[in-house]
Length: 301
Length: 309
Image (cartoon, rainbow over all chains, first blue to last red; front, side, top):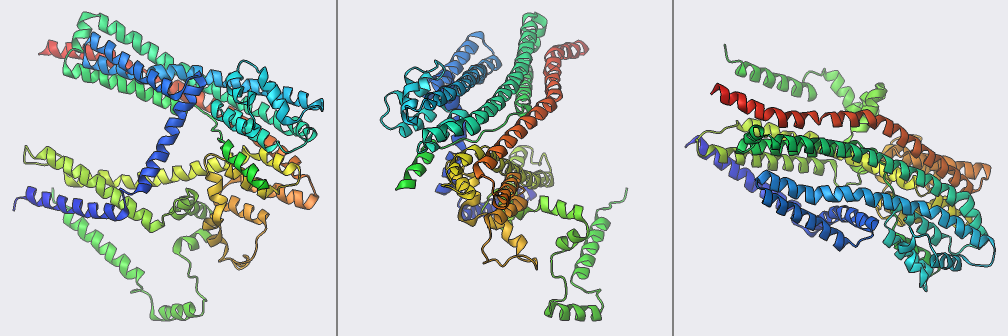
């Protein structure tokens, strides 16, 4: 028997054995699908976060991402070489959102900054002793800070303030806003005096601290992004210079030249990835405000 | 040069056989074997595994075994599988990768009737999946530890609000906030006595440990969780709860101070990490030289090679 045939037989036997093992392990079961969906959720959540930071819906944001990619591909097709087509497509798909994410993060930070004056105003209103927490919240939502106007909209015509707070957290998609909503929900049943004391001793100092961490997070991310921009700008200038010289451009016309360009592109993406990886950030715990509301309701059920 | 493969193989087989005979007691004197049998019967001998006995003598080894123990990492990462199931899974993955590599090798060799890469190299490459799986498990465990610590640290103010009116105890407030987190890391640890997975087996063999069915105080439970899972915040909570019980302090005040301290710590950590990241970022930006040089030097290399042709 030829050794190659023997090798094929051994390979086939191992493959059949593996198929049996994997089938016994339940690779195709629904649990795995669930797990795959659960893994996909953080990705979608990140996209939702950016979309809400820019004040757009998820659909509009995904449309812009796809549109930018399409535009990049179209521009690449008009210019010519396959690498340029791929490169511009990638710039449209990843580069444009990367640039817009900075704007979204800045807007989120501004919104978080407006939360502390909001809480101070709430405490001031309650200190006068003429309103409950529910009424004070509705009052403040009538004439809010422009940075909070969109997220506080549900409080304006709300019948149930706790339901409106859940909607506020859903709209804002910011960890700090979620925390504020949770704290307000937890304080709903307390007297205004108790809330004022809690807000002054526990909540407002805590939000100050949270905001400082957020600002540092933002500064670190902005620094990383700036470094990334330097890399991209230098490489773009070098690329344009090389392509404008006839003799240099000729070397990249062949298949190997195109592969070299792909390799360079991969290296730049790798450097940007490394920059993203080493940028320090403090992860935030996200709150399920609806679950808190249900727990509060169940307490009296 | 003479072929050394056969002598090395024989030597390895001999060493393996010698080790197996030693392990099964072929070289142990009869008197020692008899004593071992009597000792085992009367519980007079140390029956613990070798690594535990070694760890007793060398504390650094104990730390190493503790940090690298796969069952412990599985419990911290909240994986339901046992050590054996994990091993079987890793072996299956190694085989899948190995078969895929061998298949590619075979397809590549079909035209030339010769395998481009020896099959052993494919299997060695697939074998790299074992350390990778272990590293991924370790990373998952570290991440879960970090997230549970953060979940407690970032919920202390909410716990302070809940305990403010005296309606909730500290442990009740912790369970309440755990149910309100979007990611159920903390809840998974506290719910259904999951924490016993790692805490119970370590404590029961000790002579002074409490009986398994005996009721434990929340402070003791938190302390044990903190120690077994390396969760700093549970240790802090246990200390604070002890202070509340012994000195009669107000829970919401203690939790507020703890929240402030945890926040300050986070800010300090962030500052340190930012300073540490600065030179690394400079290094990463410096790596830009590689694609830049490649972009400029490739046409030069092509021109030189054309000139020589």
